[in-house]
Every structure is written in structure tokens, then in C-alpha cells.
Image 1: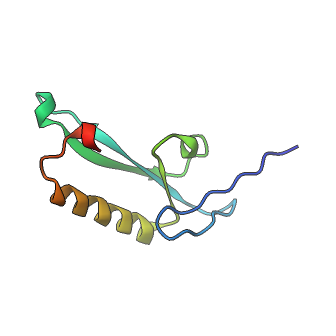
Image 2: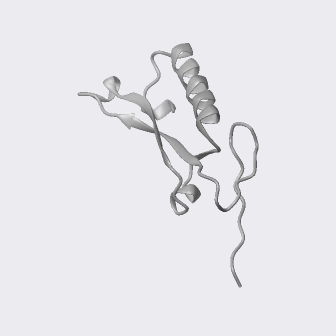
Length: 88
């Protein structure tokens, strides 16, 4: 029996159909010379079924929702400019 799973856009709530061209995003760490220099960063890539199950990965239905998520992330970074990777 085939396994059925569904994914929902983390921004707008749309359900992913099998043939939809979606995106994945997650936060990572840009390592500085010392831990105090580390900076949070965001990564974005096209949909990969296996990576869609990874902890912390956001599911995005398209460019508009990807842009919205990045805008929200950037706003949060400006609100706490001293944030380092451990607080992401």
C-alpha cells in the first residue's frame, strides 16, 4: 500500500498537491571567527521529499510565501541584532 502524506505551506496554509513545485527553507549558522561572531542565516532550496521531513524545515508553496517568510525572519533579526546561532 502506498504511503499518503500531506504537507501544508507554513505561511499561507495551502495544501501541497503531488505535482506542485514547492520550496523548503531552514535556518542555519554562518560561523564567525569566534562563537560570538556567529550569525544566523536562512537557506532556501527547491522541494525534496526526503528533506521535507527534517526537523525545522519550513514548507513553502511559492515565491510569495517564501518572500513573506524571509521578510518575517529579517524583521526578527533586526529586533534582536545581538542574536547568535544558539538563539535561532
